[in-house]
Length: 217
Image (tube, rainbow, N blue to C red; front, side):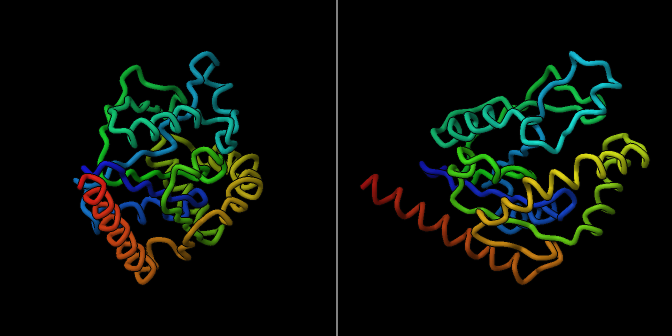
């Protein structure tokens, strides 16, 4: 591993296609070279509340995430240390007792809808990508994901979208687009943009390796 990893952030609204962009980067650069960390892993544990109360929480507000822990983890990885990333249960809204051991790699890839809203996290990133997709497409994707992957019903998904997802997107996510270095319209469907991103990452990685070799010499 190079001494200084390349930190890449992939942000964008819920259902924008961030996962597809992340998969494309993993495939294009090589999974062995990349350590993926998802902001969703850092949701705060709500085990102290009854399940009925947990479901009412605003999971799209920055305060719902322990971003300060993620920042410490990114800093540790940059310095070559292993970290224990939380494992979150999206059906129960609690953290698992077990954690995921994460080791540093040449590229640290950060993924999440709110990763550009916190300055201290944003400043860790060398490249910031924002995936920009129409609201109706994002809503349909979120419905499918929450029902199939997170054990929720349609009524609950729609209520959460109307009360929290959309207003929080307008207040926090959409304004954070201005911090992006590159905006990717249509997400994973924009193959031209994705190929340009892969080329840029390869170039940045090569430059970092060159600088590290020079410093060793």
